[in-house]
Image (tube, rainbow, N blue to C red; front, side, top):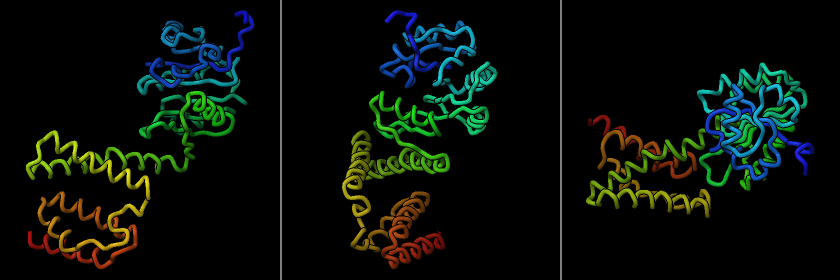
Length: 279
């Protein structure tokens, strides 16, 4: 195909390490990427060189020729780049703006949707082999297509569920890490070597996760048989105050969430209150 016949599918508004973003991984970017705009022509040229695709645009106005516009920016450059795009001479009605590997605030979304654009977000997540897709209309459909081009499954998150989804990720990562660490600390206190304690703690949580993946809630140790209350109370009394409270709350949460073994829950609460009173 002659250069004059080249018909790009999408343009890019970019800043930061675009060559490390999802945009750089798109398998058809050489054939599909057209004008690349940035805060300046120099920066746009740098982005084009790093991607090995696209044509540096003198102005973000050149993106007006495209139906689909991708956007990537580092957090610190996001406000300036968004402002340049918002001030560009672009007829947004019917266009799709997809934010790749960067968060799009509600204000930013409303800014472009108010001008007639469809807006979506395509980003990586902590979930292995999954991309997160959010948005509406044609932009959402295009984001799904980009995920398919990347060979990665997409999880579509509705706007009203975004915080719940983020909480799920937090529970499975940052909130869980201290618990794994406390498990390793207890193993070290029992004489297990430092490196081995960390590996054993991690293996214990991995085993629990594998069992859950196989049988779901039925993998819970007390799904059918009630816990040994006396042993649990002895375990709780063997550790420090902070860990005892956390462990007790986790155990009680499991019992209450399952709606089982109410007598065990009462025993644990009574033991916890008695220990607090004694302290």
